[in-house]
Amino acid sequence: MAALDWLPWRRPRRLPMARVSSGRVEIEGEVEALATLPDPVSGRVCVALEYEAAPPSALSVTGVPHSTRAYTITAHQAVDFVLTDGDCRVLVKVPREQDDVARVHAHLTAEHGLALRVAVATIEPGERVVVVGRVVDQDPKSTPYRSVHYRAIVHAERFFPA
Image (cartoon, rainbow, N blue to C red; front, top):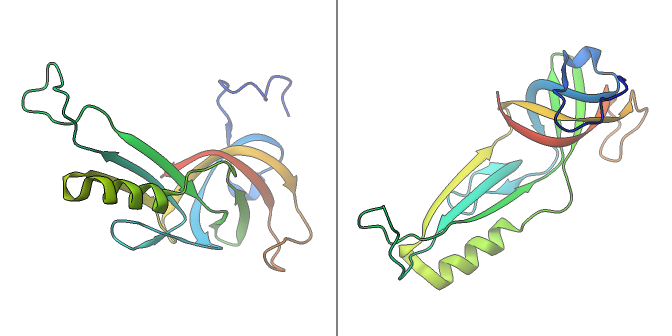
């Protein structure tokens, strides 16, 4: 690990999954679900979702003609998943402090009904993603989920479609 590798603004090392070692890394692979979340709008299953809702507002928005949306509400939720690339597998752990998107959506829908504008971005099983995070364990011998060997365990800082 480089001496200044912990600095958040330093670009992480882009590595093939077979060469993941220590420190901050950027890896790409296919998502394999350990658990799933339902998309509150479409019902599709996913491992991560980003929810954005724009309730109607009585305020007029300056500079936007005929707009009745003064603000948006965002919520994020994800579950741990496995990133695979060929025979190499990495367990990706997501941060625990998250929003309950289903509860947020239910509350906003009950309050605003059909006037609520909603956009949801998901990451579904089988999708290719890039994960940026910190390797916390390399070549773990067992996992809490299965008896399958993982190349590493990575705590994700962020991830996005490849």
